[in-house]
Each structure stands twice: as C-alpha cells, then as structure tokens.
Image 1 (cartoon, rainbow, N blue to C red):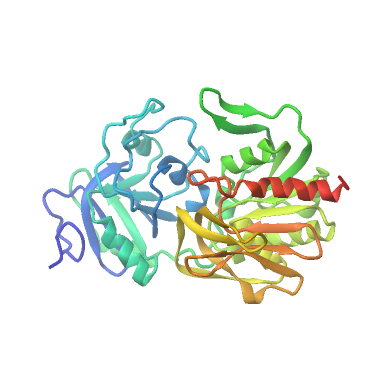
Image 2: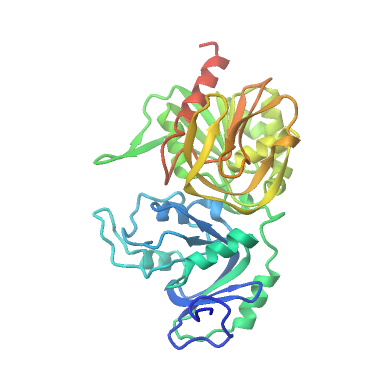
Length: 394
C-alpha cells in the first residue's frame, strides 16, 4: 500500500502538507516546505554525498536540476560564507528526507532554511527520498516541479503540466547561463583550518581557464599548484584564449548537454590543440574535449552524482574514490585513434578519462578538486603542471 506521504496520491493536498514534488508522469510526493515559497521546474536527480551540501547546491553543474539528497541529515551544520562554489546557486530546488534542524557547527553563520530563502530556492522535506531514488534508478531522471506553498494551496494539474512541458536537459546549452560575463584573474588558493583561503604570491605558470560553470575550488586547486589563472567566458574564441599567452589551458566543469555547448566551444579548443598548448579538462570540459577530437557523447539515464564513485586509472592500475556530478558521458568507441582511454568507472564501465597521444591534452569526467569528496585525485592537477613543465623542456 502506498503511503500518502510519498507518492501516487490524489491532487487534493493533505491538511498537513505545505510542499509537493510533482513529476511529469503525474506522481505527487507530499511534504513540508523549506526554503523560499514558490515553485521551480527541472530535472530531478539524486546525490549520495554525506557531506558538503552547500558546495553541492552552489555547484554550477546543477543548473536546471532539482537535487534529491539521499543522506537524511541535510542542514545539520548550517551554512557559512566560505563553502560555496559560486555566489548565485544555479540549482532549481532541493528534496530532503528529514526536516532541517538547528545548525550545530562553529563555522555556521546562517541556518540552511534561511540560506535557501536568501537565494530564492524552494524545497521540500519529510518525503521518502529512498522511493524517489529508486524511481530515478529504475526509470531515469524525470522532469518535475518542486512547489512550496505555506498556505497549503496547490494547483497540481498546473504543476504537472509545467513538468510535462519542460524540454529537459537533452540538447540544452546551460553553460551560457552560468559562465562569467567578463574575463577576470584568480589567485586564491585552497582553504586551511585556522587560516582560511590563501593567496598565490609567486606564480610559476599562467593558465587560462574557460568557464563553462567553473567551481571555485577547481580554480583554487590550479592556483595551489603555482598557476596564476585567467578565467574567460565559455564563448571565448581561440584569439581570446591565446592572446593571454597561456602556459596551459583548462576546460572547466559545467551543466547541460555538452553537444550543445560544443557548437561554439569546439572551434576555439581545436585551435588551442593545434598550437599544442597543454590542456586539461574536467567534467563538461572532458566531454567538450572528446567532441572536439571527433568523439560523441550521450545522455545517461541517471547520471553519477556523489562522493563515493570508484574509478580505475588505467595508466597506473590504481583505484580512486572520486567525487562526480554528470548526466552525460563520452562514448569511448567513438574516440579517434590518436586518443587513449585513461580512466573507467568501476560502477558501470563508462569512460572517466582520456588523453591525446599526439599532443599535450588530457581530461577526466570526475571532480579531482573533491569539494565535497575524497582527495584521491588531487594528483591530476600536478600531472597538468608536469605536462606544462615538459612542454617547456623542464
């Protein structure tokens, strides 16, 4: 028997409900509202991380998505001014199992509920997130609407229609919505207890980062290796990138369909490759590099989102536990002969990395900056600097 607090209930709201998650197939999950009042439409996905919810919600790669957290205690450490990946979150809303409790952490400056309100993010709690996760696991990520109505009044048919009419992420270029509007410099390094974020004072190299939705902690990791970073918009041309005379070029993470973004991104990246400037890509940057080389990508049914994803580095034979957030993947069989697969997922065997055999370029599908997540893959930033060293004969 289906619980009225989970799914499959009539359109009339229970008396206790102040929020609902309405899926395109008509399923309704009733719950209690958190965050801002109102509604938002997007692709409903799930994230399995146990920590770092503030970094997750502010990751620009979640543009167009409603995040279901499988870990039940979200909000228990509050929010602060440091653990953000961008100033304005691009996620559409959140789905939580338990109610948001009072924060219990010395770094907290604002409860999560108040923080969500300040960013106009609606959410729902007191729902069976296990049931939602199973639905996504078995049937793929659905379109949905999360609605927070403090007065308990809902127009479910309207919300259902909004979910059905939303076009979905396939074919959608979202990098253009989250990228920087102008070029800027970055020299902030990673965080340390008692010190906060550091500052790069003696840069060894200069890297141009193409921002498709870059996380701040990726830029900090680049700076931590001694690289002064110039960040350029996703629409930057080859001339825009190369006029900075970079020692290396970085392709960032980001949201949406990589094939849609590659329409304008690939010509610039192809010119960088032709100049044999060392290049490193992460997540969407990995997919765009693959497309530029002649490969293909596809939409995944449920994606990889969490901080516990096992990946094997085929060049070393080592297994890394990685942080991931992607709904598209590279089709390895489509890659050209001058490309070598370097990493694979031990969950489902999808491609997790590649390198060019005739030029200094490599990329990975996952997030080596690990924010949140394990730090097994931090070596990739050093590998990028070693590639720059080699290009300069050092």
